[in-house]
Image 1 (cartoon, rainbow, N blue to C red):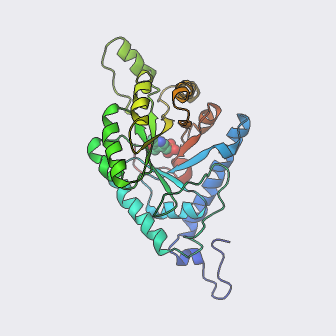
Image 2 (spheres, helix red, strand yellow):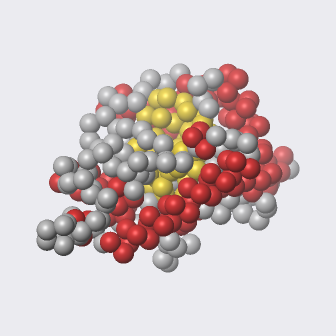
Image 3 (cartoon, rainbow, N blue to C red):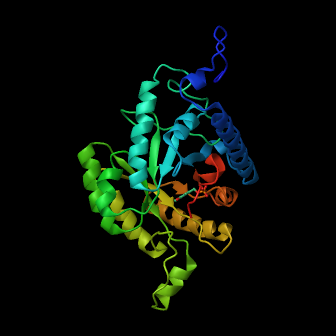
Length: 293
Ligand SMILES: *Cc1c(COP(=O)(O)O)cnc(C)c1O
């Protein structure tokens, strides 16, 4: 239906709405491939694909891509840099408001499908925004202007400020605790030496119970589960297996904290095999990020 030429004028309504039909076709094709990969991984693991949520990691990509992907059914998006995300979310919200009533951009959106779960933001648009980057306390206020979730809470020093800001804005913030899956950091601590930071962040699994209790008791914050990035230089599957063990321990004390956010473009199959519930997919959906390490 979407992009079908107007029978009277021959005009492409998507193009009229400022949508690049070539880019839109590419995003549609990439989304279909990812949904099939997720469905296949779910089948292989004996899991229901409906239990898997696709989060489109739109960092480095423009607001237009987010709007187009939304018309294709995506509802959850993630960003990792506040400076980039704040203005982008504002632009997306504005474009959706301007196009309200235009079935090619606003309105009910796409049908959804395997892995594209919906979730709404009260007020504003029907998108759910996740912050997945390293968070500094002095950036927390700007992040909470747009973020529905912060998935990268890895230290107790963040909890108080996030709680205060969530209460202040009058809308709860969903939290995932970011777990380090880097064995070298464990080892480094054990031998008492300073280890080069893997750069991927995350709390030591041993620190997790205390951090979880802190978040669970904080007004304005909802503890949802864990997030992790597979460490470089080792196979992803055993790392995600460690994450699963951490998540299983967490849920004993915090039964509502069932989210396991793991799996990116290169390792989503391993993540699904080890119980991931939320997949954060960037390059496979949008294409290679130009000039970003
Ligand atoms: C960029 C990013 C992703 C997506 O990675 P791709 O390999 O592009 O799919 C997922 N999670 C985090 C935390 C990221 O920063």
